[in-house]
Amino acid sequence: MSQFLFYNHFKFVEKYTVMKTTIKIQNLKCGGCANSITKKLSKISSISNVKVNVEETEVELHYLNKLDLENAKETLKSIGYPEAGEDNSLGTKAKSYVSCAIGKMS
Image (tube, rainbow, N blue to C red; front, side):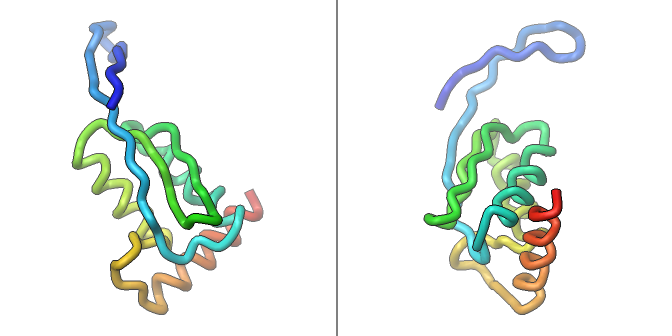
């Protein structure tokens, strides 16, 4: 955990404890997948420092609270990369192929 000071839109200083985690995921195969995951998670304002390790099928990220972490996991699942141990249906795998293709094109 790290503590950071952030300026909100009112210029007040707020102190946040930033937590770091690594999530093992399914269906991660290549750089296209990693690109899609990084872009999608980086759009979440309370998620930062997203790093994808294709070889280990892991996503590392920093977050502010448990709700942010759950949001990140739901986002991963929605684009076809559920957490290891969760249901990995044919539909979920198909989503990962689409996300991978998008990641390769962008």
